[in-house]
Amino acid sequence: MESITRRAYIKFILLAFIVVFSCIGVTYAQWTDDLQFMGKVEMGNIEPQLVSIDVIPWNTTYFYDESIITEPSISITTDFANNSAHFNISGAHQGLIYKIFYTVHNYGTIPIMSRIPDNSFSGFLVDHEPIRVESDSTGIGEMTITLIDEGDIDFAIPLTFIQAVGI
View 1 (cartoon, rainbow, N blue to C red):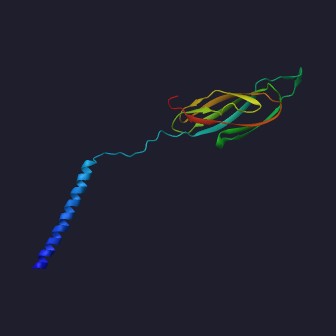
View 2 (view 1 turned 90 degrees about the vertical axis):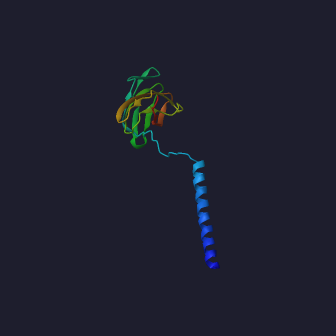
View 3 (view 1 turned 90 degrees about the horizontal axis):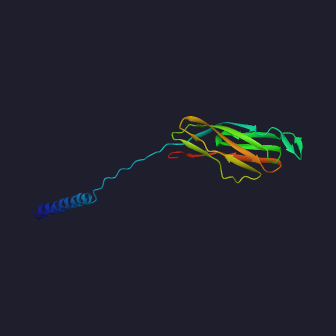
């Protein structure tokens, strides 16, 4: 008989532990009653792609020491994947001006704004007016390069793009 009472006592103790731990869990849940939402908010993406670059000499007659000189030769290597252009001007003369027209298509979902790095180029000045290109559309930009040094000039101009939301 004693073993039945002892078994009943053990069952009662186990049942009591289960009830007590359940109450602790319910009480803890009640005390920390918070509603938390977890989610991901995406503003969109920018995916600019340089489509073309055209260079036009701005001044067609070049004077040097009061004599007419020949137009320097220019070669352009474009890296459309990285949105940059590498220019090589042979026989450059001070004051020579080039207009560069570029076309960009924005495959992204938000508008973009073009920009170039600070005007810290050596041997020439770059004047660039930023353009805004809406999503899934094409924009045409322009920059002016004025040569300061003479001789052969080799440089690259990377075009970078930023989000134009709120601008």
